[in-house]
Length: 295
Image (cartoon, rainbow, N blue to C red):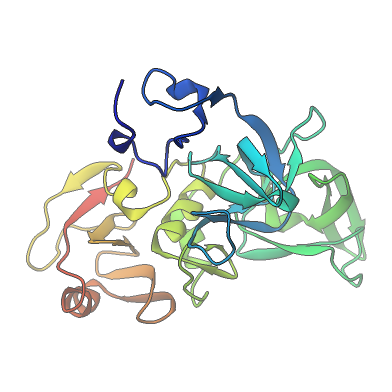
C-alpha cells in the first residue's frame, strides 16, 4: 500500500480519517466510504482547500455539475467534482442530492446569461449563470419574437433562458478557442472558473469543456495534455489552439503570433503577442517551459 504522499491530493480523495473507497488498496485511512452524488444548485460554488471561507479557493463548481460527497460536517461537504476529479470543501448550501429527476442535458455556451422565472426578459432574473453551467431542458417558448429555452433547475424550480445562449450537450461548440475569446476583459481571479472571474487554467478548461473536449483543472495537469511541440526562437510553426506553458501559467495561441490568457499582470483575460508576454513573464516567473498541441 502506497504512502498518501504518492497521490495528488487535488485528484484523489483521502485524509487520515477518511478516503474514497476506490483508493482502499492504495492509501491507509481509518475508514473508506462511497461518494454520494449531489448536484450544484447555485450559480457557482467555491471549492476551498479547507472547510473555512478564508482558506484558499482552489476552484469553483458551476450550476448543474455533479459533486460526489464523502463527508458532510455542518456547513461544509468534502468531496470530488465529477467533471475534472478535483477534491475539496464546498458549502453544503450549494448542493442538492442527485436524484432521478436531476438530469442535465443542456449547457450555457456564452460568457454569461440569466435564468428568468418564465419566458419574459422584463422579469427580474432568478440568477446569472456562466459558460459551462448545465441545465435540464423541458421545452421552448417565445415572447414578442424572443426564443426561450425552458429549463428545470437542480433545486426544483422552473425557469427560462435565452435559447441562443444554450446548446445541447450532444452538439458542443465547434471552435473551443472561440469560447475562450468570449472571456476577453473578464477579471482575473485565482481559483475562479466563471464569467465573474477566472484564472489561466480555468480559461483553458471551460473553453474546452464547452466544446466537448476534456481538460484537467490546473496548468501543471494541462501541461501533459496532447502532443509536445518544438519551440523555435521566433515561435514559428505555432497555430490556433496550441498551449504555451510557463511555471504555473498557461496561455492559448489565438493565431500564429498572439495569445489569449487570464493573467495577473492585466488582472483580466487579455490578448497580446506571445513574444511580448514571454519577455515580461520570464523576468518574474521564468521562461516558457514547453508547448503542447491538445487533441
